[in-house]
Each structure stands twice: as C-alpha cells, then as structure tokens.
Amino acid sequence: MNNETQFLIDSLVERLVVWTMEEFNLSLQEALSVVYNSQLYEKILDVETGLYYQSSRYNYNLLRREITLGKIA
Image 1 (spheres, helix red, strand yellow):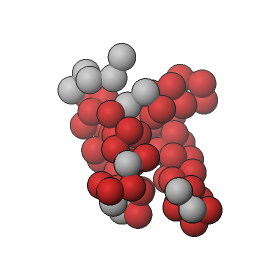
Image 2 (cartoon, helix red, strand yellow):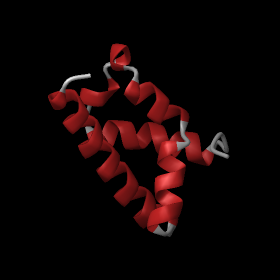
Image 3 (cartoon, helix red, strand yellow):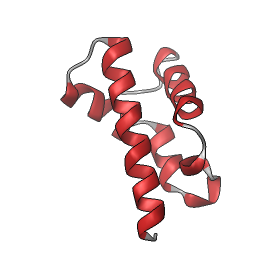
C-alpha cells in the first residue's frame, strides 16, 4: 500500500470515528473499536474493493447500516 492510499484510509477512518462518536454517543475508544472491528474496515483495507476512495459519507452510511443491523461485536 502506498502513502497516498494509506493517507486516504486514515482520513476516512478519522471521519468515520467522529461521526460514530456523535451519532451513537460513544467515547473515542468505543468508536475506534467499532470502526476497527467492523466488516467495513476490513473491506476498506482491501484496496481491490475501492471503498477507500469513496466518499466518507458513503462509507459512513455502510457503517451505520452495519451497526444498526447488529453485526458489530
């Protein structure tokens, strides 16, 4: 993974964590755990999916759906 790709992933994760904290009233540690343990995060890291360069809002909608459907441990 090159530096540009890693930067895009890091920036995306930052936004996902902030929005998760705000919407679900979680602490930073809880939100980080939710994001990093999500199926979405695994897919973001797989550069073949192309999710890392999709908008943060698009990815957050996927994460929100994953959270509300109860697939996050």
